[in-house]
Length: 356
Image (cartoon, rainbow, N blue to C red; front, side, top):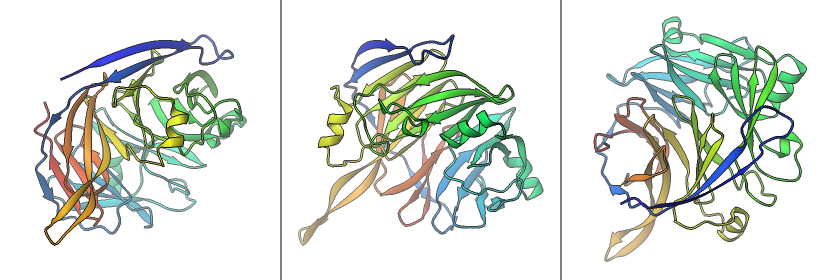
């Protein structure tokens, strides 16, 4: 059952960058009742010590281990065999100095690729198949930031995305950008070839000053690069941003709007959405819930993972309990399987055929 109420308001995103559309915020109070589904699971014969990130794309399963010299290990999703490793730590031309979790991956002309952000040196588009063939890191495109404008923008950015060749979207925290009167994050659209910002899109409209960590969100770029979903970690809130129209849906899954600053002050640091993944059709939000396990002799509380699945219009479609704690996960681009790493470092594949 689907139920929604909405209210829309707009504000000027910036007065010094023109022409551009105002950011329009639509509050959506949702009372959807999702279908409860089950995903059959299979433990895969892949043994890695403490995977730190995971990406399933095309016929590859990429497992990152940031503590090792070669960070990315590539496995076949058909045979589970190790195919190769690349992306080395260091100061060489294609090596990385500071490298976090991957924020963007894409299929481009049938080829699977990753966007690598090596802070503070460069942003690059890595060709997975060519890197395997050469057994070393191969980039199709590489963006360095040597001008005063480009260097300043890149150093002050959180995650950076490639919306098109030479068209970059830089995530900005107000504090790091010198803004002192509000805490609302925004994106700056930067043309690397022309070395200029041509658009700013404010994607939050919260009141008051809020510490960045408290209102942090997992940002999910849709594969067609036209929308972004925001999964907030410490408030029960989801944002869906239409990048072209500058339209932001703020979805309140509990069916009631709240002031974010007030909610954060009273929730005792409760966790809502741990992280997420997306496909062209759905948003997959990982959270955890506490359940009681045991028998007559004793009952203990334990936490298991839950996956909440929304469509890109903000409707709450499905809910699935994974019956175990999950640290990280990835959904393949064909939406056939969900791959996950549990707290014991086992790598598990869940069948998504129950999705319609």
